[in-house]
Image 1 (cartoon, rainbow, N blue to C red):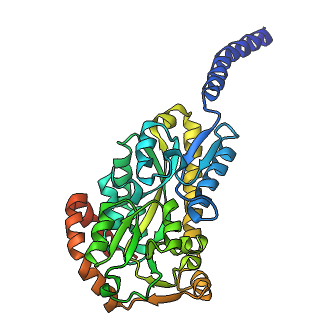
Image 2 (cartoon, helix red, strand yellow):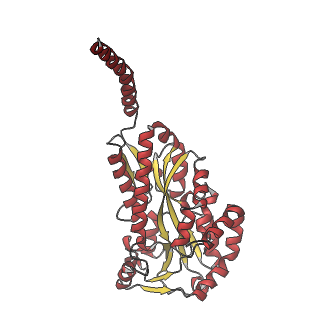
Image 3 (cartoon, one colour):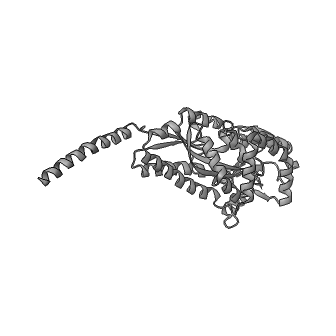
Length: 345
């Protein structure tokens, strides 16, 4: 009798379990065969390495249920970096590792990181992205049809040109500088007396090669990987005027289509890939490890390190730009950022 009861109990349990398993299988069957991940840069740039690593980790952590293909060069929006976030919201793009600069035309608060000379070092950047300011920005992004998961990093943007060393704002006067598609960058370089020219990264390299533009500003990892020294960029100034965080995000409808288990797997993969990507982006540019700078110098590039007084001259020249854009970004957010930076350890 006991055996019969046990058998009946087992059958009842199976009856309850089978539908759940079938439902789980049905959910997995509803997943796309491939999810499109957008990045501006591919490998060997740290940005592309981070995106590729995220895709790899997601496949591993979800047991192959979620497969991602990376599309570098913002090819899903014909190379127009400023349209990436809109396409992400609309579902043309499923996932992205995107730049705060490129998304700032749609999310004005992301201009925070482009305020000239707000962040003096990596600890200041970390104080923002890993603190309350970063959380507030993620909360804001979550209202814009995307699910932000982790902060990556393109790096502090240094300036180079083909004409002469830059040590003072006067040295920028009349130089044609390629900048990203953000009005804040136009204002900053106009204030310094340069002639800023907006263009995509795909267009920037041939423009540098032909001399259509004199210079550009980008993190050192990009300077090396893009071989800018071979494009006439023989003068490089380390001024650290802005930094460019990256954000690992998923379209909200795509996110909602995944099981809770897979959502957490994708989040964990993003956090891990982002941490690895940040480490790569900072490699070789610190006081402890300056191997990347040595590599640049070995390529015949003159590297200028601004003294505090020299940097102050650039900061003073761009202060009106800072003040103007702080109002647009939100005075409270900017004050919170300044406080976090002041309290950094």
